[in-house]
Image 1 (cartoon, rainbow, N blue to C red):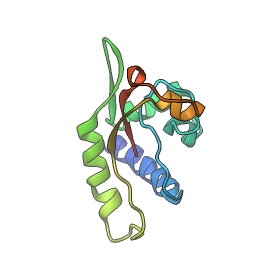
Image 2 (image 1 turned 135 degrees about the horizontal axis):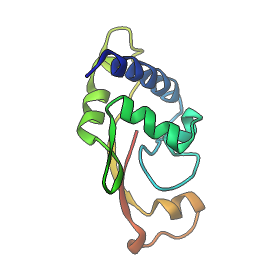
Image 3 (image 1 turned 45 degrees about the horizontal axis):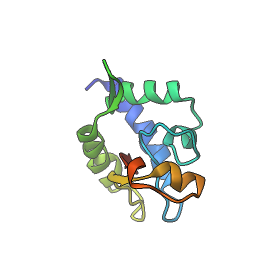
Image 4 (image 1 turned 180 degrees about the vertical axis):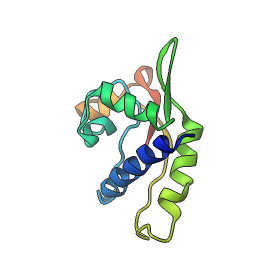
Length: 123
């Protein structure tokens, strides 16, 4: 990984440390929904800018089928020095977790259905 990727990851980690102050809240890393829980919105970025940021940080890549996050890289990033060094505040607890639910129903406040359940990742 290049030094530029490390600098980008430093900035992402700074944002995530800031967002970790939200009590019992999670942010979706990669979903197809335009909502306030989507991490790109929390970063104040367009979807394209967000995707470019994650590609530059080697946390995602573009494939023939479209944009795809690198789950192993996210797990390494969250478990790495950005969140475990002595300078990190002790109450900063960030996890990378896979969820399976009807997120559209959750966001819209309607009854979820089994048919619309999908897998996605949250922080």
